[in-house]
Each structure stands twice: as structure tokens, then as C-alpha cells.
Length: 87
Image (tube, rainbow, N blue to C red):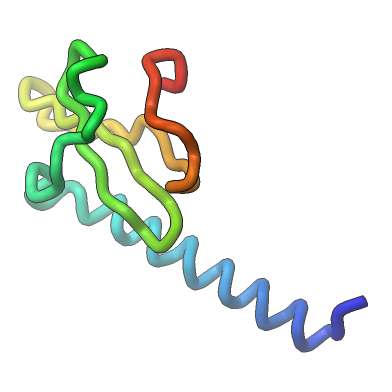
């Protein structure tokens, strides 16, 4: 059984990681095309981009017409390649 302080430390680390991820997603409003197109792009009809945050991959689409960035998927990088049914 883990101690209360170890549990608190893990919660604080998780909270910090989540806050940083939220900041990274918010930063997409400024130059979202600075991130690369995904390797699986040929499978998709729309352009998808990605960035990595620690052990997570964030998949997003930039809609120029609407001036909007859509975050479509956040998942662990060790997962298999992205498929159309994942979105």
C-alpha cells in the first residue's frame, strides 16, 4: 500500500502533466501548422497534424475556413497507428 505522501506526489505530477497538456492544446491557436502532418496521412481525407506531449500523441485538424483547430484524439504513443475508425 502506498503512503499518503506518495499518493499526493503522484496526484500533483498528474495535475502538472494535465495542466501542461491543456496549455499545449491552447497554444495551437498560434501557428498550429508548426507541427508535422501525421505519418498515416494517406489514410485520411483531411489533413491531420500531431504533437507529442510526454508519452501522449495529440492528433488535430486545422480548418482554415473556420479558423478553428479541432483536437480529434489524445492517446498513448505506444498505441498502433491511427486508423479512420479511431476518430
